[in-house]
Amino acid sequence: MLEHKQYDFDYFLEKVGNDGIYQKRFSILFVCIYSALATAIYYSINISLAVPNHWCKVPGREGTNFTLQEWKELTIPWKKDSLGNKEFSQCQMYSRNNTQEIIECQYGWEYDNTWFTRTLSSQYDWVCGRSSYVTDAFTFLTIGDVVGSFAFGQLGDLYGRRPIFLISTLCVVVGRILDLFTPDYWLLMILFLIGNMPSISVYQCPVVILMEISEKEKTSTITISNQVFYAIGYGIMPLVFWVCPDWVSFSLILTVPFVIYLFLYTYMVESPRWLLDRGKPELCLREMIKIAKINGRNPPQSMMYHLKHIKPEVESTYGVMSLFSTWALAKITLLLLIQGSAHMIIYVLLYLNLNNLEGNPFMNYFWQAIGEIPGHLLGKVLCDKIGRKWSRVLGFLIVISMNILLAHYVMVRNSEVIVSFSLFTLKMSLALILYSMNVAIIEMYPTALRQTGAALNYTTGCLSSLACPFFVYLATDYGKGFPYAILAGFSFLGFFTSLFLPETLHQDLPETVKDVDEFLKNQPLFFLPRRRKSVFFSPVKQNEELLKYRDTNHSV
Image 1 (cartoon, rainbow, N blue to C red):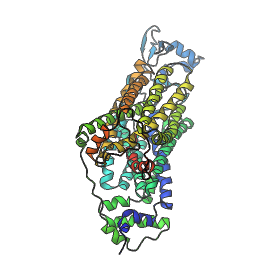
Image 2: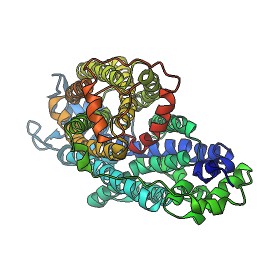
Image 3: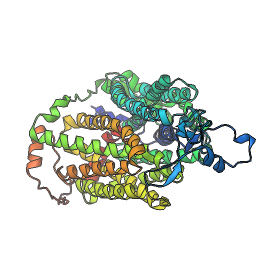
Image 4: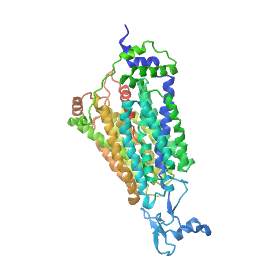
């Protein structure tokens, strides 16, 4: 007789190797390097849409000895910026027939080449009367996020992680390369949408596969590795543009290496766990043998027989309305949706508004990216020390403070150091909040509603972020500090909702809808978590098990 444990999938996974050479190679290729490249490509379109300082092109200087400054003083009228300082008009010029008459630009525009030799916006003159085109581009990019996160997430569960990985990679390559050579406005918008659709699945598919072929104790390590390389890719991206300040060459440098993954796809296995759950033991065995071969293992001869007799667990599923089936569940859901939307708006608006900041635009992006690394690590430490709730409360308080500072100092000249420090601290705090929020979402919901709750939270956040391009556009009318004043308001909303959500650290987590009611009744507003005196309780291990849901809801 065979022992009962031999009928468990994890037993056979251990036999073929759940922490071997294959897992390590997979982690380096598809979780670390791939994640960094995908992030760099994803954010590259934002900095490519930067609008350099510009003014009306007035022909004739070539035949004179005038410097550019002298020519602008002769041909371009002055205007006052939002601080009351004088600057040259970007959209008007003096009439060549009457130097007292001010007219709109007649011969196109010239651009300041201090930082960029060419951006997408300067190539197509998306300025002045067509400045709303930049806002439209951000809107289509965000729509791509929303549509893709919903569609690819469902397709991955239906058809497998591996084919969706290939489709996602193909969408990125096609979308980002074709938009380099497409002058048509509407076709360009469609390509933006296509290129942004896999913004979640490019991370989700390889990470989920690695989690499902690795030992459970590696879940937290896989998640942190993915997020650290996400931040590294975000940080490398502006440095590449700094070295190569032409948006076409810059985009090709980032995208062409990504094409390699269309061929490395053959090295990727489909999740054998998913195949077994789908009732495909033969295909499951094939993938397990691939893993065993690279790991140098000899799987049991009887593995096929036992895989056929493993009965996958049937997981009950509930609709979105189940999240509002009781007062306690509805309260938690509404507070989480408001908090998640506030966080998403802050995160998206923060990076969309980077192009409006003074100083070195590449370092503005770089400091934001680097801030995420200590933020995730600090989030892990604080969540297990002071709790999930108070980690978010602390994070939102810091975010409020930094946004108030930025609302003032982005309007002050020569304040680049303060602005950079504030952006770094702000991004670090947002990463801390994200870590805490994703863990808390899973812990607050009963088992059958965890994935539904997490998916609804992310989708609602994406829909809310559709307003972000409009807020950035308003900065041209109300000043560069306006978006940060908006962010301070949303930060307070996140802080307020955090206070009224329960603490989950060291608590008996709800497993049923009824448990949620009891969970809320027995916890005061200013509850402080305390470790229980039990040799069986381990919040760290509990966290690692729950974190497997986290990467499927990674925010942009």
